[in-house]
Length: 202
Image 1 (tube, rainbow, N blue to C red):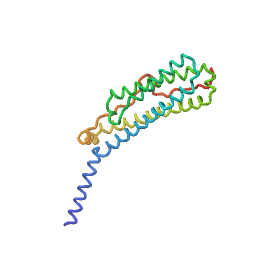
Image 2: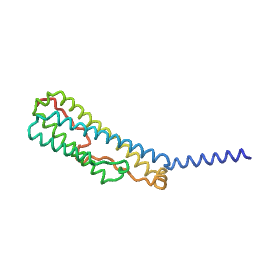
Image 3: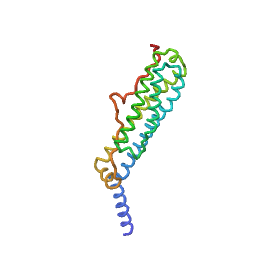
């Protein structure tokens, strides 16, 4: 009789554990942590871009005055972009996400304008340091696009998990889960990595 009771107790515990796991006890935090990890990748790529800008300023010191003005704008935009931080706890705050997106978009647009303006300077385009930096920036823009895509997919999965049965039970009752905000392009086409082809010598 004790053996039968033990088996029943085990079956009951196993059933409860399965039932709880099917109610989002594990899937909701797992999806949340995945989205947060993907956000960390996005931040790392934006930081990588920010770190390259002082090198760009150093390499392009011979630029004309108009390009210096754009470079100053880029430097100031970099300062603004790096001062706007989003913690993992802010990923469900649309206002903070919008502020971060706007700062990064402004920096990206200024950087694109600056690089395009250097087409008129063969001495800059022939500089090996500039060419290497240009390649790094192009690669970084591509990495940013991939990181944002991966983050948005993780957010989609998380938001779907917390809204669908049976995970929504654990999401709302146990975790108090709130939807996360995807990273949206601030301007049309901003989600596409720009082509930074500065080798034409035009």
